[in-house]
Length: 259
Ligand code: DGL
Image (tube, rainbow, N blue to C red; front, side):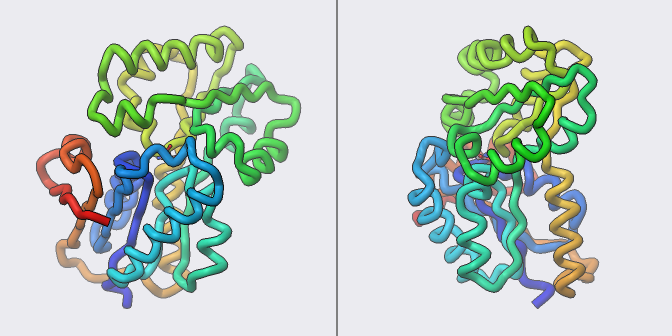
């Protein structure tokens, strides 16, 4: 069982930013990554639809004998992980916007959260925000259009730059000192964010924490792959695999798969 793959899914290519962290920490784990790009963005869909798609993705990965599933999508985690955990026996690791470290570290008492509409309107997010955000100016911004631009290969476009300036300018004016990236597509924006944001604003994402949590849960369940052999990795996308390929580089191959 420990040699079985870890499964990861996202509404699209963004969760590969999480896969990179998981693979970096656990290089001998076999992995299967599923991008449901055909249905991206999830962030504009209702909770029921997000649950339905998350179930479909999970069943695909379980058919491939995955021993643990990483929901590499904030929108799917905040809307569907509770249902997934109650329905299936495998362990699930989710990802949520890292409000806690930002709220604990802020000096200016102002933090920015950039996430999808589906994440910002979820119950899980409002509970976390209420828990850690009291006494702090939490500026929530729905990153409308960002996922679509990334999914269509326009990551470093002028259009993207303009959109980010529009979303971040009010946060800069409000004197935030932390920006929380609440969507797994957004770590790919890092070069643009560094260009736009003043140097003192710290950018926080949850990728590394997800990888550490994945390792802990594998250990607790005695599922860690102790082999020292080269691991196998599969990347599947049901639309535009070339976009995922451009994010993966030459060492890995993105395959088209109808699902
Ligand atoms: N990567 C997804 C997330 O973390 C993007 C959601 C979407 O498809 O809108 O939320």
